[in-house]
Length: 168
Image (cartoon, rainbow, N blue to C red):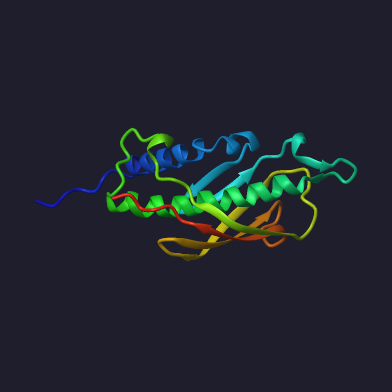
């Protein structure tokens, strides 16, 4: 007998639950207010504007540290999500009642270089990461951040990460 595929709502709830557990496992994400929107296996990070994120009130411009943290968090969550996606879809990750205490460890940053292309304006920011190399021990990621127009980046970054060991 052929096994029927799961209803799309169940699959969506499972994927959203794993992403929620992943993001809730990092308190700094909540501190900054970063959110993640999922479309299939693609993530878009959102940094909602808050007055506390302004570094130069005369311009006003987003603080460079907030921008850097936003880009690094986007890279790490994207790497973790890609790893989890493969394990989740293959059935290797038990997703029933999952929480952040039962997820694999996060990648560790080796280095992270940010290019500030223009001032971040006092409004919401968005970012997407692209994994340029992902091995068992090491990964490279580029991240692009924009505000109103995807083609007008205000910052971009490149990072290298040590990947956590896969648990059997």
